[in-house]
Length: 309
Length: 282
Image 1 (tube, chains in turn green, purple):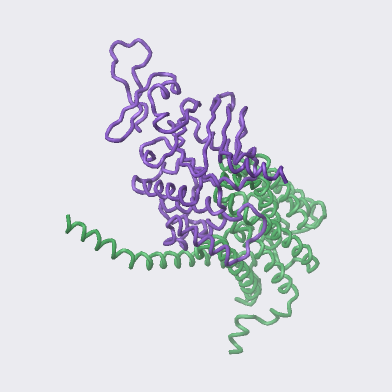
Image 2 (image 1 turned 180 degrees about the horizontal axis):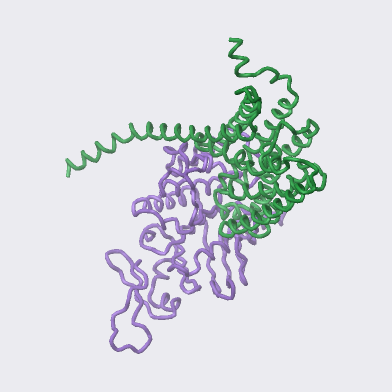
């Protein structure tokens, strides 16, 4: 029993400061990402969410170059990006992809420039990997208060526009006729999304933030019937996958003889992806089970009609 | 006190909807020209006209989603304001994706307070009101099903329940029969007629095909070329009235209790053509 315990939780896991910080920040970030993710998937704004990740990358690398806190860059430029995307038409489905693509392209170009300048200045090593793919074990404990505060702001924003946002997701016409300010509601959501993506850029990297945003939400939406349930399930999946990823990354240090730990972000994303595949299997199975008994009565009714005819 | 009484009296006698001289032009194109009509309490009115006649634009003006270039809209004697819960609305295209995690009862509940801020707390009164409303539109069976998985007719019922649960005095429906098969369409129509009578809600329903509505319509607003004629079907569906609207001669044919509006011979001197062509099979 003890052996199994130490095999799963390798020695030093619970006393490790980086692991504790990673668990707190990763958990908080996963929670915020899961809630915003459900609305992102429902509103069909996954591409926008991904583009905001790229904007965050530009912000983070710019902040690093200027010697600022990367988190400020991630979130700050993400908010600006969300505002720009809203201005050039993210609220209209037709022009949404266009606006998103343009902002995304500009952001990646900026990241390329900032990361190049950072590399030739030689101040830090591994900046591209840190910005794009994250390194949660290196995050300083001093980041915890700002992560929690920013996460709380994003969640509060979504809680405030919860009902109008749902109504506008069903139909912007109905929402507008009911007096909902559709545009403002959408903007509040975009800003919350930008903060959420900025936070997950810190945890799993700007590029992988999409995985943490979309994965748990998409999995939860397959398994549940109501928005509240979906949000709760997405939170469980997101936080669970993040913690499991941290655990596996920590353990990976003890795998083999090289004693080289593998990146946390890889494990988190791998767990999310595996969960998504499993949920597809579960959804297909339950659909098949529902179809089977239901298929019999109509068939006999049809046969009866044929006989009667 | 006297003011209150006179206001109340005015509200009691006022028409549910009073559209007065409404014109709309969009991007230089004249969509509606001087449209006027009224709808009384509990009346079932068909807004009939060919595609592109301006039906959706007119509904959007009534809802306050489109500003008219001239004219006024009054609801229950009050000028149309943007926040108005006295109108229920079922738009033409509501794409309910099967991925949308929303049960029929959740969508109906959004009709109560979907415009308010914050997360709704579970309440017995809310769910009871939703249950009653779903029962009223004969949708209890699929209360717990995802809206995206329902058939077109079933979704239409849920959307009607969503629009009615805030107890509006006027229900607007934009082409609710457009994507329904004949039988589902008939069911929706008889449901609406029953609700208009039972709950004393005035119904204004747009359609390009009037025949399914003939048995239930109290009044008709006929739109063609951006102009409108209104009254009872007997008053409006007349060759003279409709010819004036269309701007060319049309005939109104009665075939086995169905009405067909048929364009007459084109006014161009074309000796070879004597027979008209069907402008609208109705």
